[in-house]
Image (cartoon, rainbow, N blue to C red; front, top):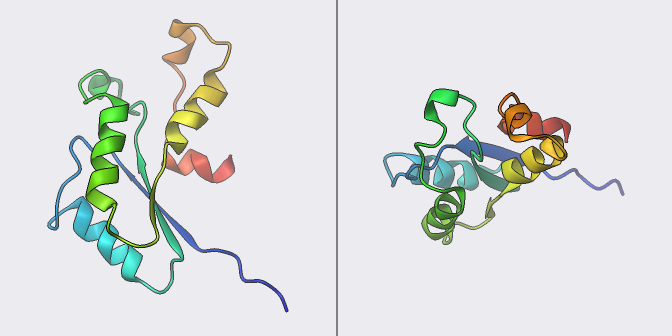
Length: 112
């Protein structure tokens, strides 16, 4: 018998801060309840796509921890550091000035 591929929903957000039932929590809970997804991956932005917002957000690890606390009781939800991992992979060996031009977003993870 052929195995069905896992269906994963990627939910990217700034998580600064992640919001409750009327926002991020409500959306993620709804996505997780849908039978069309086996898993929901919550992906906080590592380095904002818009330079004007960089450096104004809470530290990445703090936003990861806030998401882990907020979504911990929802089955099939994983908080992922995929954007950080992807950014570090594509910017390895670059100096700080070169890193300024590197853009990595949730959609880029589809090709990684």
